[in-house]
Image (cartoon, rainbow, N blue to C red):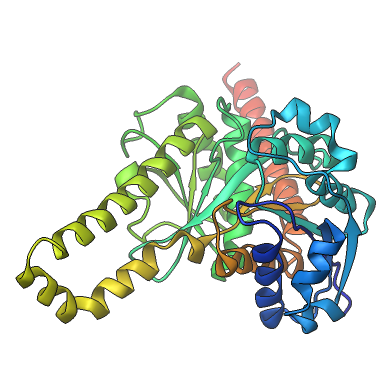
Length: 357
């Protein structure tokens, strides 16, 4: 089966061309049916491809020397979209020259250009930024929204849950993902009206959507491993994500400081090194790299700007799996089902009112 190729913004990310090309080459070893469109400065890309003949044979280069920097505002990025590597990678998805785009560049610019070029899917009001986080269980947890929408209503939260569940099925293989809304408590009376209303809609539609929904979860339970999808507004989600990442760095730094504090501690480090290496691997953001803009007419994946080649490879691998599993079609089908459920709820409510009258 011929799969759509992946457009890679080769100029995005802190390390630029070398790391982006090396990451794409690593990803292709796992997904060797894909071809790539490498967007950026052609001489530099060609030089990087010399070390990766397998990728070179399956890639085309689209030249531009224009780059979106971390300091560029979204409005500035949009004006320069047609002359920058990020803008041309997204445009390749719009025109059908690629099925998805990957970039390690400016997040705000990437979201703004993606929304303008690709627009939202029918039935989706706003796209959401979703990412995978490690847990104590054998599954990663999908969390969204992580900053694309600071304020969300009931309809937005329900749509996020549908998109997050579709994404979770792709990455976890669980046919009925465990979905929860992030809240300040698990009691049904806690939280805003929007959260409580969204919980009611999801409870009623859970069977049709093939999800396991049991209300709310709190921030300290996000990474416990007993939930597959955590849904929240972008304001709360971004704060929660940065708190989780900051805590992981704090624990790592504290361990390094503790093990270096004395000779006995250094000996203890040598004894416990297998365990500390496992912890380091589990907390390494490169092993969970690749945030997805869900809800667009096309797939766009954001790689950490500081990601190494292995991290970029993970982001490209996430992109490949989303294309292989037709996640956009899955979201469309689930939206249709929740629409039918909402219609039944309205009809049942109207019938009940008539009977009371």
